[in-house]
Length: 370
Image 1 (cartoon, rainbow, N blue to C red):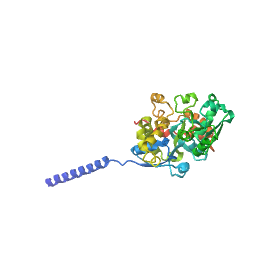
Image 2 (spheres, helix red, strand yellow; image 1 turned 45 degrees about the vertical axis):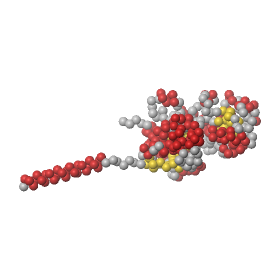
Image 3 (cartoon, helix red, strand yellow; image 1 turned 90 degrees about the horizontal axis):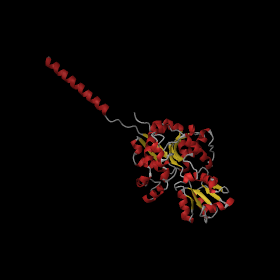
Image 4 (cartoon, one colour; image 1 turned 30 degrees about the horizontal axis):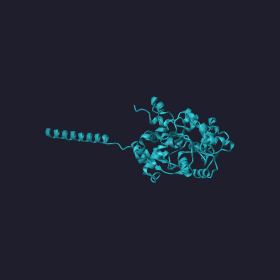
């Protein structure tokens, strides 16, 4: 009997040990990470949209538990995709979310992807200097991009800059780069305010001369042009709020990818971009050359603060390349007013900092771990 009791006790002890081991194994088993799906609408095949491709190719989205679909070359349908739910996020001209808000679909900018790069001023056939342009007086005509385009705004900025003496010039919009180049080549305008890609085409087409180069040191100081964002990451406010945990992780990912997107990584970035349909027709050297002319304004270069200012700033949020302060937004609205964006009133409540900008996602993303 005693032996039976001992045997029973042994069996019970073994059973308890097995149960405990099973419980330990269950609790120590690796927990499956939550993976959230997000879709980004990327409007055009331009290298200034490099950051999402870097984040995808380098595995940064995956690192933060995100399955991100990149929809390329969404063009004029981009904003509609946000409204219909076919995309969660886009990155475009900062006036784009304001246009949505003006239509009753409140959208918010939550991270900067591009700061203002300035604009190239090129001469028409035979116009090789600013003095020649100035001498034309009221016969001077400056072409810019389509209404809502930054380059059109710069046409007005250059006209109104007293030191240039171009107050007699008229400024006209053009529907696209093809039309602008055709009019310039046909000598229908004296000058044009354009991005570098269009300036290069004009130089190749009819030997256009550069009258103002925004890449030169001292450009902003010379023409008294403040730093402000021209492109932001944005989405519909309600959709972003409903997916807040995923959006916070998304901001962590793009903040990391933005810091990687800098002048020291041109070859690596070009290699990240090249496999995608937006860039597959170009060789690595061509992509690298395009990046070289835009890298200082995108990614890590998109920061509103200078590098020296950021080094002194101990706050990871305000030192981030994606941060927008209220003062910067006020400056930006003054510039956007010159872009002639149809239906946009920069003085309306929907354009105010509190309604149009939401830095809470960035703040949550960069909050120090306890």
